[in-house]
Amino acid sequence: MASKANKPLRVTTDVDFTVDGKQFSYLNVPHSRNDSAWGSVRVPIVVVKNGEGPTVFFTGGNHGDEYEGPIALLKLARSLEASNITGRVIIMPTLNLPAVRAGTRLSPIDGLNMNRVFPGVREGTVTQMIADYVYSVILAHTDIVVDIHAGGKTMSLVPCAVMHQLDDKALMDRTMAALLAFGAPLGLVLRELDSEGMLDIAVEDMGKVFISTELGGGGTVTTHTMDIADTGIRNILCHFGLIDEAVTTPQARRLPATRLMHTPDDGCFVIANESGLYEVLVDLGAEIEEGTPIGQIHFYETPERAPSLYKARRTGMVVHRHVPGLIQVGDCLALIATDYEYS
Image (tube, rainbow, N blue to C red):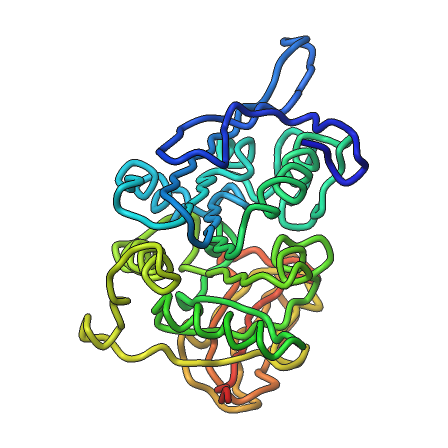
């Protein structure tokens, strides 16, 4: 298989995407270093296939300190059998394996953010080579991508399934249907502060369905966020017909229906203009009015200085908050989402 530059791929695997059955294997990513001249990073991949049908590609560990995705997908990889599906499921529970090993957002090998390097670089670093293989090979086999994220160590979010506003109405309709089928408490149509190099954009530009999640945060998991991940992943397989079962709706679980919200512009983001100690004044999930104080920054080296107060620039729900008490200039303190009507 050749990459975008029509050269042989540097990443290799013995997986055969065309055969029926269940395969556990690895992507072998070259990584020559001082302690291993012919070394490699072996990134797990699982392929489950049975006959003709859609292909769903699930990823976790895009960022290494977000754990619902890897845990839920490891469980799925062990439990899913080819005889139970029609179509193909490709699973990479730890897309950025070096970052997962280190428990960090970025890869400790090259310092790169996996979700900002797509479509990847054949001649690049470990992170870039993984992205190149995913872009050049896996996405070519794929109809639907579900990338499971959470807030990591530095963010906490109201658990949500996430998509973007898309210009292609037909693709927007299919993606919205998938987001609602996932069944998270919140469905967020997110405006990104920086979308360059995201897996999301690479998939959307191919005209394929992409949804993501933001499930909690703080560098841990809860029973609630794991339940959302486990149920949502299975719902996606049901929704696209790989499993012959009905989607498990929130109502069937005695939960409220998915609430649709969006972040229409940069005014939804509250950004720190100073460094100091951050005091939260409203809790995650709070419904607030424009102008509501949401937090203040205290200046621990100048005790005589009054704290700097930050207020919401939108009426809506606090769907994200910064977790560490120590804040730096440019950090996102909070994200305010507003209700969204889709037709």
